[in-house]
Image (cartoon, rainbow, N blue to C red; front, side):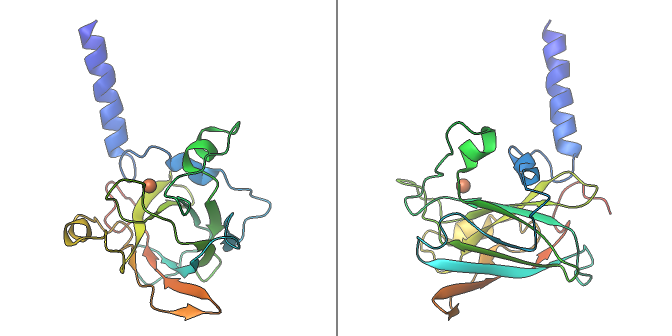
Length: 201
Ligand SMILES: [Fe+2]
């Protein structure tokens, strides 16, 4: 019996560690978009009723870092202004666990994307910096996660925290110093496959 458990454990370990991006709990939530309505712009629930408001945009590039990547799904989710993921009761696993502040885009032919949302708060009673989770789904690949968005001016984003980032898809640390029409303008470009284990073109 023990051998069976060892075998199953090894199987789970090996399959998890050879897939694109390594193991990822919840990356499949990137697939929960509506194919009828998805575009390269999304506005998340709570955008108009929370502050500070954010416009997050950029270009997704292929692994060469130069060729725009079209038709790529990005999925983001984050906490509310109390640092909580406000789960949607009676819904599936990921709306419940990731909460209602989540959105999806599909890059256009120029690789461009935009999310309108608001700045999340850090978890209550914890020292984790404010962050927005990001998962990518490329055509013909399983979804994998990229570095979270972090805010350069966040006091909880310590030197140690910055150094611990793996820069999956490029750095997720963004500047907050530009505001237009009352909305902070966040820029982040993404390079597919960059620092992603088991990534194959
Ligand atoms: Fe989180």
